[in-house]
Length: 204
Image 1 (cartoon, helix red, strand yellow):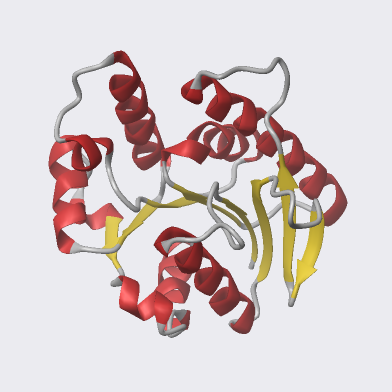
Image 2: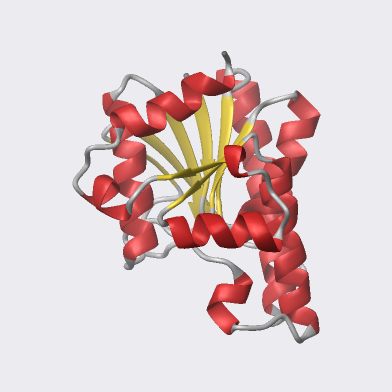
């Protein structure tokens, strides 16, 4: 399958989510899938790169400049959307969009509907889990954006049964849509069967 993957976190950015996305993409390449990964610009890396079969495009926020985080996320999504269109024009329509967390929700949803492409998403944590409450405008914005992503996705991947339960209860998402894949499976690089089955199940 040809897959466009959207993520704000990818090496050399450090952390568990970056590692997760890297090993996920690498595992999918090993399965024979074609991966076009769009992430945010990093001064240490080229804007375009073929990383052992993972075609990477790094984008920056569109203008105008803002210090407001949620506005910045929206502007990055505009840039991700533009890059998605460039990829589709050059390589053809992908079979799937795979989005990571609420940050990529707007670009993922737009491409899904514009090109009629199934959407899979990873939710690595929820706004409620991170803060314990949804009691400010910015938290409500992020939480509603998370809901949009999980609502639009054909399948949702999480790393724990606890997170699966949260998404089911907070966002009223059917448990059948949510698949739990333990982080250790990803970091052990043994993801081919798990993720492959999720992708294949969408087309059954």
